[in-house]
Image (cartoon, rainbow, N blue to C red; front, side, top):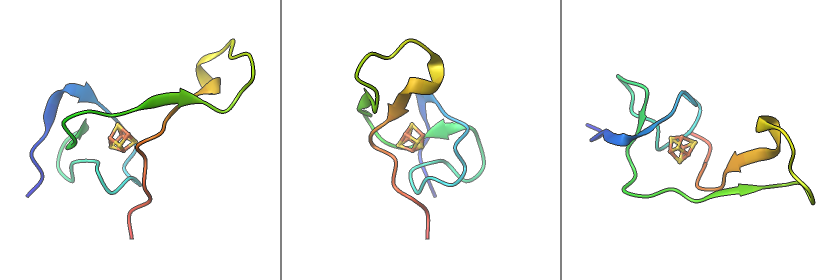
Amino acid sequence: MDTPNRSIECTVDQCRYHCSDCDYCSLNTVRIGTHEMNPTEKQCVDCRSFEVKY
Ligand code: SF4
Protein backbone atom coordinates (compact mmCIF):
# COMPACT_ATOMS: atom_id res chain seq x y z
CA MET A 1 0.00 0.00 0.00
CA ASP A 2 1.49 3.33 -1.07
CA THR A 3 1.55 6.18 1.42
CA PRO A 4 0.61 9.39 -0.40
CA ASN A 5 2.75 12.46 0.17
CA ARG A 6 0.02 15.11 0.31
CA SER A 7 2.58 17.78 -0.55
CA ILE A 8 3.30 16.24 -3.97
CA GLU A 9 0.32 15.99 -6.30
CA CYS A 10 1.00 13.93 -9.41
CA THR A 11 -1.12 12.42 -12.17
CA VAL A 12 1.56 10.30 -13.86
CA ASP A 13 -0.02 6.89 -13.38
CA GLN A 14 2.76 5.21 -15.35
CA CYS A 15 5.35 6.04 -12.68
CA ARG A 16 6.20 3.36 -10.11
CA TYR A 17 6.07 5.98 -7.32
CA HIS A 18 2.54 7.14 -8.19
CA CYS A 19 -0.02 6.06 -5.59
CA SER A 20 -2.28 3.44 -7.04
CA ASP A 21 -5.51 4.80 -5.60
CA CYS A 22 -5.01 8.59 -5.61
CA ASP A 23 -3.13 11.29 -7.54
CA TYR A 24 -0.18 11.77 -5.21
CA CYS A 25 3.47 10.75 -5.21
CA SER A 26 4.60 8.24 -2.58
CA LEU A 27 8.16 9.57 -2.28
CA ASN A 28 9.25 11.91 0.53
CA THR A 29 10.95 14.23 -1.94
CA VAL A 30 11.23 14.50 -5.71
CA ARG A 31 13.78 16.14 -7.96
CA ILE A 32 12.51 18.48 -10.67
CA GLY A 33 14.65 19.35 -13.66
CA THR A 34 14.61 20.22 -17.33
CA HIS A 35 15.77 18.65 -20.56
CA GLU A 36 16.06 22.06 -22.25
CA MET A 37 18.95 24.51 -22.38
CA ASN A 38 16.59 27.43 -21.79
CA PRO A 39 13.19 26.26 -20.48
CA THR A 40 10.32 28.62 -21.33
CA GLU A 41 7.18 26.46 -21.04
CA LYS A 42 5.65 23.89 -18.70
CA GLN A 43 6.48 21.15 -21.17
CA CYS A 44 10.19 21.88 -20.70
CA VAL A 45 10.14 20.78 -17.05
CA ASP A 46 10.25 17.18 -15.82
CA CYS A 47 10.13 15.09 -12.70
CA ARG A 48 13.59 13.56 -12.62
CA SER A 49 12.51 11.05 -9.99
CA PHE A 50 10.21 9.32 -12.49
CA GLU A 51 10.75 5.63 -13.03
CA VAL A 52 8.49 3.59 -15.25
CA LYS A 53 6.11 1.15 -13.58
CA TYR A 54 6.65 -2.47 -14.59
S1 SF4 B 1 8.37 10.38 -8.88
FE1 SF4 B 1 7.61 12.17 -10.04
S2 SF4 B 1 6.45 11.30 -11.74
FE2 SF4 B 1 6.72 9.70 -10.21
S3 SF4 B 1 4.86 9.78 -8.95
FE3 SF4 B 1 6.44 11.03 -7.95
S4 SF4 B 1 6.09 13.12 -8.71
FE4 SF4 B 1 5.01 11.70 -10.08
